[in-house]
Image (cartoon, rainbow, N blue to C red):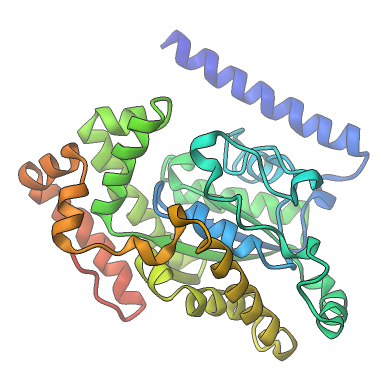
Length: 327
C-alpha cells in the first residue's frame, strides 16, 4: 500500500512539474500546445491501435505533438504512451522505442518529410489546407479506470483551455480472443508489460469487459467512427481512406491525396514480412496451433466469461452493420 501511494505521489508530482515546465520553457499558454483539430483513438490494449496510429501518421496533415503533452493534460496522468516522448526530426518524425516494438514503425515515415512523394499541385493543396492539420493520440480506457465521467470531465477541462478545440473520435475494436492471446504473447516477450492481466485471470476479464463497455458508452457521448481491426487488415486502403474522409468531410481537394497516402503506407508496410498485412490471415487450425497455451486454457475453462465479452464485442460490431464472429 505504501509503495502504491509513493508511485501515485511521484506521478502527480511529475504531472505538476511537466505542466509548469510547458509554460515556463515554451513561454506560451497551454492552449498553444494543442492543435485546433485532434484525433483521439480509443481502443483496448493489444487491439492494433499502434498499427492504426502509425498508419494515420503517414498523412502529411496528421502529426503528433512532441513529448506526452496531450496525455499529461488530457488524461491528467503521465503514462508511457506509444510513441513515448521520443519524436525528433533526425529519424523522420518517428519515435525510437525498444527493439520489440521498433519493427512496427520503421517503414512508416511521415510523408510531409518526403519532398518527392507529392506533385507540385498536391504540395500547394496541402499548403492551403495547413490549418486543417490534426494532432493524433490514442488512449486506453484502463488509463481512466474505465470511467467515462472522468473522460468527459477532462474533455470539458480541455475545451476550457482552448474553446476552439475540435475532437474526432476513432474507436478501434478487435476480436476479444485475439486481444487476450496478444496480451499473453506480448507479456512473454516483455515481462514488464501487462503483468497483472497476464497473471490474474479475473483482472484480465475485468479489463477486457470494461474496455468494450467503455467504448460502447463513449460512442453515445462522443460519436465517432468505429473500426474493427480485422476489417482494417483485410481492407486496409479502403478503411484508411474512409477514416480520412471522416476527418476531412466533403473535401474534394484531399480525395486523391488521401488515397495516395493510404496506398503508399500499405506498400511500405508490406515491404516488411513481419508486418505484411496479407500474412496475418491463417486458417482456423493454424490459429489454434499458434495460440498461446494460456489462451487455449481460457477457451476450454472460461466459456461463460468469454461469451460475456463477445456479447459486448458483437454489439459494437452491429453498430457498423457487421456480424462479429467468434473464431
